[in-house]
Amino acid sequence: MSDEKSKGKDAPKPRTIPKYMNFIIGGTAGMMGITIVQPADLLKTRMQLLGPAGKNASFVKVAGDILRKEGILGFYVGLSAALLRQATYGTGRLGCFNAMFDWHKANRGVPNFPTKIAMGVVSGAFGAWIGTPAEVALIRMTADGRLPPEKKRNYKNVFNALTRVTQEEGITTLWRGAGATVSRAMVVNGAQLGSYSQAREILLPYMYDGLPLHAAAAMIAGFVTTIASLPVDIVKTRVQNAEKGTGQLQVLRSVIRNEGVMALWSGMMPTYAKIGPMTILIFVFLEQLNKLYLHVTS
Image (cartoon, rainbow, N blue to C red; front, side, top):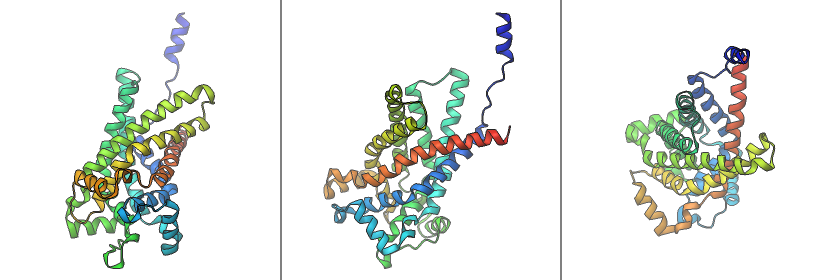
């Protein structure tokens, strides 16, 4: 017995990744993922901004219009802003969650399910707040292609967009819709974490615990997250694209009154086409980057 105890004491502790690397790896994984799903994100934004005129427009029609008018590169308009958003929002969200998880595990044991949801909500709010300027730039850049020539903003890149918004409209405009952005992030993180965990638990008896299981659970989580977050996302998008400051409730009432309640779920297919694969990609990239870091530093 004493030998077993001594072996337990002498057993090497599993290597962990430093807290600062959690932030760096989280942001990098997000940037890698968004590079692949940017076309779906752009489609989602364009559909959300159509308003009453585009009530019956399908994502296939919107995609066709973009391809015809802007070419294949039109699907990657605003990519620099999307990358900056992941470098801020993704870094803050994933880094904050991992830091809180590690602290809780070291001091109070493995967190239970409700605690994990709370951690996801808090980390989502933190990441969203610091990522709002890039979000504003992203919405405006992806919306530019649908505007008439005289109203186009023609931002050259995300840094040009941030500079011009600050100079022309004031620095506080960079946080326009921050409340809606934070609200959406809290809903997304809570729904994503909860539904992924539940789907994984349900599927586990029927599937091997590996990539196929994680992918299936992530796709289910992506669908649940899409349904839960789209109304908040549409309000956020329109608030941030408005030329003048507009409140969330004002936008929400306007959408329901002029377009109907179901308009709050417009762009569902491209949104799901982004969230589902994005969830899978982030976790795959996170795992591979973690392994790479441990290998390089071993």
